[in-house]
Image 1 (tube, rainbow over the protein chains, first blue to last red):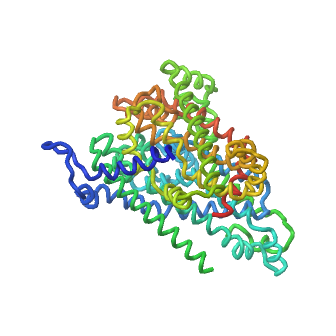
Image 2: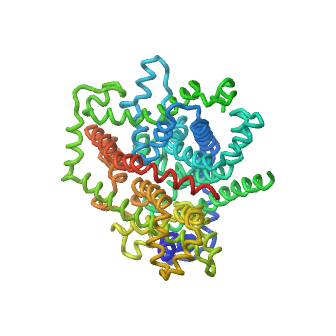
Length: 275
Length: 297
């Protein structure tokens, strides 16, 4: 419990406390009420970052979870040769640190010795500049998908294995094929795990920091210090010394995350009850 | 499910489907090719890196030179980072797994006041983004005077709401109440029961939590970046990114130091190996723990 307090409760309370103050030239650190919050809500940079991760969320998370779902169902179907190889192989990227993954993909994307460009040249295909402004978000999305596809696959696969064998047998007696079984038994059984994976992905997306922060050095003109809200909060605090405002930004971001995550969870719960 | 051909969907015999295997093969390729590139690149010098094809060897085999350079650069700072990472991972993840196990077990098996509230708090804590905590954590630690010490990385690593949650679910299923009662009748104290009986039953769950916290601490970047400024306490992730900044010229010197690329690439390979090995060796345990953990969700 003590660890819990130090690790979570105390910083959280302190963040809320800090966010109500401001450093002033005259008068030092003074209580300013909700000033930092109104400033955050009206802050163009913050809103742009928030919009960016929202866009990211709407595209990357469904793509990643769909791939993970397909992989989990495929491995569970029993129709795959060498299922263990696929299970481990697709999971391996999860063990790679985000920093290494971002560096590696950054180099793959890049002009200096980018593999993707080399392959494109060999095939005479014009590869888009993956580190340019138009492609950056997609490029980061690819890194995140690569990292967590296997992890989500495993969570879903684990859930699939808890489906009682009798259900399948009953379905087969009723003449259900593999597709029918997948649709009527496996997907409903996966719903809770899928909801959990979605919630975690949402939280992860709003927190997006490591990948863009690492890639910043590869594309400094594209990735600004406020590229994602988390980067903004970080840079406000550690490069701008605006700790109070940074705390407010972090609290707003945390609030947004919690609301969205909770909404998704509540929705999936309701669906479950209506079944 | 579009990857399944209709023909493969029919019939009861479990034939393996070529179409499915090919489709999954593509996914496997996507997962592993970048790593193959990384491995191959670690055998090249900085000249070959930019001139040779990424998926084949370059001129000469420089892996051992590269490894030597990584290990000796700046008086062996890489080894220091490696040792730091090991310390953070072993102590942090080990501690987190143990605390999670004890807490999850207590929540699952003992009735006490505020039990349900506590369980709800744990669930809620999973949803709190690390962002909201990072800046205040730093300020709090700087007040406590432990910024720029290993404690600043270790303390937060010990907290794992997800681990507690997983272990609670696991303990409900894995430790039968009747066994606890039997132990009590035999005169075993609660602590002794926990260590001699329950812990053994909880082992698969424990290994699962241990591995996931191991990944979390080994790969941790955000927190150390914030609370550490002295390179001698850096973990590998922060150190590698610093080298990358030197390579790309983002570190402020202006000139790019392409000689650093092999260091970054080879250093990355060395940083990945321990975790991959840990996962492969312990997979039998953590997969069963994961499966049990998701039952009641």
